[in-house]
Image 1: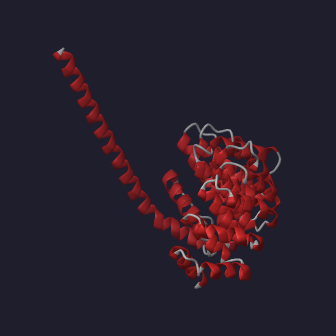
Image 2 (image 1 turned 180 degrees about the vertical axis):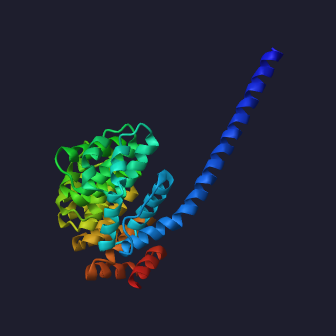
Image 3 (image 1 turned 90 degrees about the horizontal axis):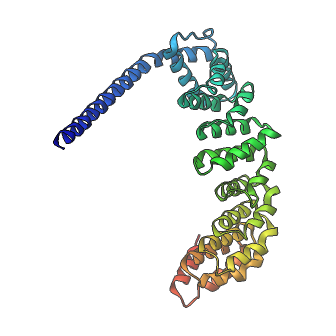
Length: 340
Protein backbone atom coordinates (compact mmCIF):
# COMPACT_ATOMS: atom_id res chain seq x y z
CA UNK A 1 0.00 0.00 0.00
CA UNK A 2 2.81 2.38 0.94
CA UNK A 3 4.69 1.58 -2.26
CA UNK A 4 1.60 2.41 -4.35
CA UNK A 5 1.17 5.71 -2.50
CA UNK A 6 4.85 6.56 -2.99
CA UNK A 7 4.54 5.74 -6.70
CA UNK A 8 1.48 8.00 -7.05
CA UNK A 9 3.29 10.86 -5.27
CA UNK A 10 6.34 10.41 -7.50
CA UNK A 11 4.15 10.42 -10.60
CA UNK A 12 2.36 13.57 -9.44
CA UNK A 13 5.68 15.26 -8.78
CA UNK A 14 6.88 14.32 -12.26
CA UNK A 15 3.74 15.80 -13.79
CA UNK A 16 4.24 19.04 -11.85
CA UNK A 17 7.86 19.26 -12.99
CA UNK A 18 6.85 18.66 -16.61
CA UNK A 19 4.13 21.32 -16.39
CA UNK A 20 6.55 23.85 -14.94
CA UNK A 21 9.08 23.03 -17.66
CA UNK A 22 6.39 23.42 -20.33
CA UNK A 23 5.35 26.81 -18.93
CA UNK A 24 8.97 27.98 -18.92
CA UNK A 25 9.49 26.82 -22.51
CA UNK A 26 6.33 28.60 -23.66
CA UNK A 27 7.34 31.82 -21.90
CA UNK A 28 10.80 31.70 -23.45
CA UNK A 29 9.28 31.15 -26.90
CA UNK A 30 6.88 34.06 -26.40
CA UNK A 31 9.67 36.36 -25.23
CA UNK A 32 11.80 35.45 -28.25
CA UNK A 33 8.85 36.05 -30.56
CA UNK A 34 8.16 39.40 -28.90
CA UNK A 35 11.78 40.48 -29.28
CA UNK A 36 11.83 39.36 -32.92
CA UNK A 37 8.66 41.32 -33.66
CA UNK A 38 10.11 44.38 -31.93
CA UNK A 39 13.22 44.12 -34.10
CA UNK A 40 11.33 43.66 -37.38
CA UNK A 41 8.39 46.00 -36.81
CA UNK A 42 10.13 49.39 -37.41
CA UNK A 43 11.50 48.12 -40.73
CA UNK A 44 8.06 46.86 -41.78
CA UNK A 45 6.39 50.16 -40.84
CA UNK A 46 9.00 52.11 -42.81
CA UNK A 47 8.60 49.91 -45.91
CA UNK A 48 4.83 50.29 -45.91
CA UNK A 49 5.03 54.05 -45.36
CA UNK A 50 7.52 54.42 -48.23
CA UNK A 51 5.33 52.30 -50.50
CA UNK A 52 2.20 54.33 -49.72
CA UNK A 53 3.98 57.59 -50.46
CA UNK A 54 5.27 56.23 -53.76
CA UNK A 55 8.90 56.41 -52.68
CA UNK A 56 9.60 52.70 -52.99
CA UNK A 57 8.73 49.65 -55.04
CA UNK A 58 7.01 46.53 -53.74
CA UNK A 59 8.36 45.79 -50.22
CA UNK A 60 10.30 42.57 -49.83
CA UNK A 61 9.70 40.20 -46.93
CA UNK A 62 11.96 37.17 -46.49
CA UNK A 63 11.04 34.39 -44.10
CA UNK A 64 7.85 33.62 -42.25
CA UNK A 65 8.72 35.89 -39.33
CA UNK A 66 9.31 38.97 -41.48
CA UNK A 67 6.22 38.29 -43.61
CA UNK A 68 4.11 37.81 -40.49
CA UNK A 69 5.18 41.16 -39.03
CA UNK A 70 4.69 42.92 -42.36
CA UNK A 71 1.14 41.50 -42.60
CA UNK A 72 0.33 42.49 -39.01
CA UNK A 73 1.50 46.07 -39.60
CA UNK A 74 -0.43 46.27 -42.88
CA UNK A 75 -3.66 45.01 -41.32
CA UNK A 76 -3.35 47.50 -38.46
CA UNK A 77 -2.77 50.34 -40.92
CA UNK A 78 -5.82 49.39 -42.97
CA UNK A 79 -8.05 50.24 -40.03
CA UNK A 80 -6.67 53.79 -39.94
CA UNK A 81 -6.40 54.56 -43.66
CA UNK A 82 -9.16 55.81 -45.94
CA UNK A 83 -9.59 56.47 -49.63
CA UNK A 84 -6.79 55.82 -52.10
CA UNK A 85 -4.24 54.91 -49.43
CA UNK A 86 -6.52 52.17 -48.11
CA UNK A 87 -7.02 50.84 -51.62
CA UNK A 88 -3.29 50.96 -52.35
CA UNK A 89 -2.46 49.06 -49.17
CA UNK A 90 -5.14 46.46 -49.89
CA UNK A 91 -3.64 45.99 -53.33
CA UNK A 92 -0.19 45.58 -51.75
CA UNK A 93 -1.47 42.85 -49.43
CA UNK A 94 -2.88 40.96 -52.40
CA UNK A 95 0.27 41.43 -54.51
CA UNK A 96 2.43 40.06 -51.70
CA UNK A 97 0.32 36.89 -51.71
CA UNK A 98 -1.22 37.29 -48.28
CA UNK A 99 -4.78 36.89 -49.58
CA UNK A 100 -3.88 33.65 -51.35
CA UNK A 101 -2.16 32.42 -48.20
CA UNK A 102 -5.25 33.22 -46.14
CA UNK A 103 -7.49 31.42 -48.63
CA UNK A 104 -5.25 28.37 -48.38
CA UNK A 105 -5.18 28.76 -44.61
CA UNK A 106 -8.94 28.25 -44.42
CA UNK A 107 -8.34 24.66 -45.50
CA UNK A 108 -5.60 23.98 -42.93
CA UNK A 109 -5.95 21.20 -40.40
CA UNK A 110 -4.94 23.37 -37.43
CA UNK A 111 -7.77 25.39 -35.96
CA UNK A 112 -5.47 28.29 -35.04
CA UNK A 113 -4.31 28.57 -38.66
CA UNK A 114 -7.89 28.62 -39.96
CA UNK A 115 -8.86 31.24 -37.39
CA UNK A 116 -5.91 33.45 -38.36
CA UNK A 117 -6.79 33.07 -42.03
CA UNK A 118 -10.40 34.06 -41.38
CA UNK A 119 -9.25 37.04 -39.29
CA UNK A 120 -6.99 38.19 -42.12
CA UNK A 121 -9.74 37.91 -44.71
CA UNK A 122 -12.16 39.76 -42.44
CA UNK A 123 -9.95 42.83 -42.74
CA UNK A 124 -9.20 42.71 -46.46
CA UNK A 125 -12.48 41.01 -47.55
CA UNK A 126 -11.60 40.17 -51.14
CA UNK A 127 -14.22 38.86 -53.57
CA UNK A 128 -11.58 36.42 -54.79
CA UNK A 129 -11.96 34.58 -51.48
CA UNK A 130 -15.72 34.05 -51.84
CA UNK A 131 -15.52 30.37 -52.84
CA UNK A 132 -13.20 29.52 -49.94
CA UNK A 133 -15.40 31.49 -47.54
CA UNK A 134 -18.50 29.61 -48.67
CA UNK A 135 -16.72 26.34 -47.88
CA UNK A 136 -15.73 27.88 -44.55
CA UNK A 137 -19.40 28.14 -43.58
CA UNK A 138 -19.20 24.41 -42.93
CA UNK A 139 -16.02 24.55 -40.84
CA UNK A 140 -16.05 22.52 -37.65
CA UNK A 141 -15.05 25.57 -35.59
CA UNK A 142 -17.75 28.14 -34.69
CA UNK A 143 -15.28 31.06 -34.73
CA UNK A 144 -14.20 30.25 -38.29
CA UNK A 145 -17.80 29.67 -39.45
CA UNK A 146 -19.07 32.98 -38.11
CA UNK A 147 -16.05 34.89 -39.43
CA UNK A 148 -16.67 33.48 -42.92
CA UNK A 149 -20.38 34.27 -42.62
CA UNK A 150 -19.71 37.90 -41.69
CA UNK A 151 -17.23 38.41 -44.51
CA UNK A 152 -19.67 36.95 -47.04
CA UNK A 153 -22.43 39.18 -45.69
CA UNK A 154 -20.13 42.20 -46.06
CA UNK A 155 -19.40 41.16 -49.64
CA UNK A 156 -23.14 41.19 -50.36
CA UNK A 157 -23.49 37.65 -51.64
CA UNK A 158 -27.02 36.40 -52.31
CA UNK A 159 -29.04 33.28 -52.99
CA UNK A 160 -27.99 29.99 -51.46
CA UNK A 161 -25.01 31.60 -49.75
CA UNK A 162 -27.32 33.92 -47.81
CA UNK A 163 -29.21 30.86 -46.61
CA UNK A 164 -25.90 29.40 -45.43
CA UNK A 165 -25.08 32.60 -43.54
CA UNK A 166 -28.47 32.47 -41.81
CA UNK A 167 -27.92 28.82 -40.92
CA UNK A 168 -24.60 29.68 -39.27
CA UNK A 169 -26.23 32.51 -37.28
CA UNK A 170 -28.94 30.20 -35.97
CA UNK A 171 -26.48 27.41 -35.23
CA UNK A 172 -23.80 29.36 -33.39
CA UNK A 173 -25.69 32.05 -31.47
CA UNK A 174 -25.31 30.18 -28.18
CA UNK A 175 -21.60 29.42 -28.63
CA UNK A 176 -20.38 32.79 -30.00
CA UNK A 177 -23.21 35.34 -29.56
CA UNK A 178 -20.95 38.34 -30.18
CA UNK A 179 -19.73 36.96 -33.50
CA UNK A 180 -23.29 36.11 -34.53
CA UNK A 181 -24.39 39.67 -33.69
CA UNK A 182 -21.70 40.93 -36.10
CA UNK A 183 -23.01 38.53 -38.76
CA UNK A 184 -26.60 39.70 -38.34
CA UNK A 185 -25.54 43.36 -38.42
CA UNK A 186 -23.55 42.82 -41.63
CA UNK A 187 -26.46 40.94 -43.17
CA UNK A 188 -28.94 43.64 -42.19
CA UNK A 189 -26.69 46.32 -43.66
CA UNK A 190 -26.00 44.58 -46.97
CA UNK A 191 -29.27 42.65 -47.44
CA UNK A 192 -32.02 44.03 -45.17
CA UNK A 193 -34.65 41.69 -46.59
CA UNK A 194 -32.60 38.68 -45.45
CA UNK A 195 -33.39 39.47 -41.81
CA UNK A 196 -36.99 38.33 -42.27
CA UNK A 197 -36.17 34.68 -41.56
CA UNK A 198 -34.33 35.66 -38.36
CA UNK A 199 -37.28 37.75 -37.17
CA UNK A 200 -39.83 34.98 -37.60
CA UNK A 201 -41.19 33.01 -34.69
CA UNK A 202 -39.31 29.82 -35.61
CA UNK A 203 -35.89 31.47 -35.25
CA UNK A 204 -33.92 30.69 -32.05
CA UNK A 205 -34.87 33.25 -29.37
CA UNK A 206 -31.35 34.66 -28.95
CA UNK A 207 -30.70 35.23 -32.64
CA UNK A 208 -34.22 36.60 -33.01
CA UNK A 209 -33.53 39.17 -30.29
CA UNK A 210 -30.33 40.18 -32.07
CA UNK A 211 -32.17 40.54 -35.38
CA UNK A 212 -34.87 42.66 -33.72
CA UNK A 213 -32.20 44.92 -32.27
CA UNK A 214 -30.46 45.24 -35.64
CA UNK A 215 -33.72 45.97 -37.47
CA UNK A 216 -34.43 48.78 -35.04
CA UNK A 217 -30.94 50.24 -35.00
CA UNK A 218 -30.82 50.28 -38.81
CA UNK A 219 -34.37 51.70 -39.03
CA UNK A 220 -35.50 48.90 -41.36
CA UNK A 221 -39.10 49.96 -41.88
CA UNK A 222 -39.79 46.96 -44.13
CA UNK A 223 -39.64 44.76 -41.02
CA UNK A 224 -42.06 46.81 -38.91
CA UNK A 225 -44.85 44.24 -39.38
CA UNK A 226 -42.63 41.46 -38.06
CA UNK A 227 -41.57 43.62 -35.12
CA UNK A 228 -45.20 44.34 -34.26
CA UNK A 229 -45.86 40.60 -34.17
CA UNK A 230 -43.01 40.25 -31.67
CA UNK A 231 -44.84 42.46 -29.16
CA UNK A 232 -47.02 39.46 -28.30
CA UNK A 233 -43.99 37.25 -27.65
CA UNK A 234 -42.22 36.72 -24.34
CA UNK A 235 -41.26 39.84 -22.42
CA UNK A 236 -37.59 39.97 -23.43
CA UNK A 237 -38.43 39.71 -27.13
CA UNK A 238 -41.30 42.19 -26.76
CA UNK A 239 -38.97 44.72 -25.13
CA UNK A 240 -36.48 44.50 -28.00
CA UNK A 241 -39.31 44.82 -30.52
CA UNK A 242 -40.77 47.85 -28.77
CA UNK A 243 -37.38 49.57 -28.77
CA UNK A 244 -36.99 48.81 -32.47
CA UNK A 245 -40.43 50.15 -33.35
CA UNK A 246 -39.65 53.31 -31.44
CA UNK A 247 -36.43 53.79 -33.38
CA UNK A 248 -38.24 53.19 -36.66
CA UNK A 249 -41.05 55.56 -35.63
CA UNK A 250 -43.76 53.13 -36.69
CA UNK A 251 -47.11 54.88 -36.14
CA UNK A 252 -48.98 51.69 -37.04
CA UNK A 253 -47.72 50.08 -33.84
CA UNK A 254 -49.13 52.70 -31.44
CA UNK A 255 -52.19 50.67 -30.44
CA UNK A 256 -50.16 47.50 -29.83
CA UNK A 257 -47.56 49.45 -27.87
CA UNK A 258 -50.27 51.00 -25.71
CA UNK A 259 -51.68 47.55 -24.99
CA UNK A 260 -48.23 46.33 -23.94
CA UNK A 261 -47.52 49.43 -21.83
CA UNK A 262 -50.79 49.11 -19.93
CA UNK A 263 -50.70 45.33 -19.43
CA UNK A 264 -50.00 44.75 -15.74
CA UNK A 265 -49.31 41.06 -16.44
CA UNK A 266 -46.22 41.91 -18.50
CA UNK A 267 -42.76 42.47 -17.01
CA UNK A 268 -41.80 46.09 -16.20
CA UNK A 269 -38.85 46.16 -18.69
CA UNK A 270 -41.19 45.28 -21.57
CA UNK A 271 -43.75 47.87 -20.45
CA UNK A 272 -41.04 50.51 -20.03
CA UNK A 273 -39.75 49.77 -23.54
CA UNK A 274 -43.26 50.21 -24.94
CA UNK A 275 -43.69 53.48 -23.06
CA UNK A 276 -40.38 54.77 -24.39
CA UNK A 277 -41.36 53.77 -27.92
CA UNK A 278 -44.62 55.72 -27.65
CA UNK A 279 -42.60 58.79 -26.74
CA UNK A 280 -40.16 58.22 -29.62
CA UNK A 281 -43.00 57.83 -32.11
CA UNK A 282 -44.71 60.98 -30.79
CA UNK A 283 -48.03 59.27 -30.07
CA UNK A 284 -50.18 62.04 -28.60
CA UNK A 285 -53.08 59.59 -28.31
CA UNK A 286 -51.10 57.75 -25.63
CA UNK A 287 -50.99 60.75 -23.26
CA UNK A 288 -53.83 59.53 -20.98
CA UNK A 289 -52.19 56.11 -20.64
CA UNK A 290 -48.77 57.61 -20.00
CA UNK A 291 -50.18 60.04 -17.47
CA UNK A 292 -51.73 57.15 -15.57
CA UNK A 293 -48.32 55.46 -15.40
CA UNK A 294 -46.94 58.43 -13.48
CA UNK A 295 -48.62 56.89 -10.44
CA UNK A 296 -47.22 53.40 -11.06
CA UNK A 297 -43.99 51.86 -9.79
CA UNK A 298 -40.77 53.85 -10.13
CA UNK A 299 -39.41 52.39 -13.43
CA UNK A 300 -42.76 52.94 -15.17
CA UNK A 301 -43.04 56.43 -13.69
CA UNK A 302 -39.60 57.41 -14.98
CA UNK A 303 -40.32 55.99 -18.45
CA UNK A 304 -43.71 57.71 -18.61
CA UNK A 305 -42.35 61.09 -17.55
CA UNK A 306 -39.61 60.93 -20.19
CA UNK A 307 -42.07 59.85 -22.86
CA UNK A 308 -44.49 62.67 -21.99
CA UNK A 309 -41.67 65.21 -22.26
CA UNK A 310 -41.32 64.21 -25.92
CA UNK A 311 -45.00 64.65 -26.80
CA UNK A 312 -45.04 68.44 -27.22
CA UNK A 313 -47.96 70.40 -25.73
CA UNK A 314 -50.22 67.46 -24.74
CA UNK A 315 -47.35 65.74 -22.94
CA UNK A 316 -46.11 68.91 -21.25
CA UNK A 317 -49.66 69.67 -20.08
CA UNK A 318 -49.81 66.22 -18.45
CA UNK A 319 -46.48 66.87 -16.74
CA UNK A 320 -47.70 70.21 -15.42
CA UNK A 321 -50.73 68.47 -13.91
CA UNK A 322 -48.41 65.89 -12.39
CA UNK A 323 -46.31 68.68 -10.88
CA UNK A 324 -49.32 69.47 -8.67
CA UNK A 325 -49.72 65.85 -7.52
CA UNK A 326 -50.11 65.02 -3.85
CA UNK A 327 -47.30 62.47 -4.18
CA UNK A 328 -43.90 64.13 -3.72
CA UNK A 329 -42.06 61.64 -5.97
CA UNK A 330 -44.49 62.37 -8.82
CA UNK A 331 -44.09 66.12 -8.32
CA UNK A 332 -40.29 65.79 -8.31
CA UNK A 333 -40.23 63.63 -11.47
CA UNK A 334 -42.58 65.97 -13.35
CA UNK A 335 -40.62 69.04 -12.27
CA UNK A 336 -37.36 67.43 -13.39
CA UNK A 337 -38.72 66.73 -16.88
CA UNK A 338 -40.29 70.18 -17.17
CA UNK A 339 -37.03 71.78 -16.15
CA UNK A 340 -35.02 70.15 -18.96
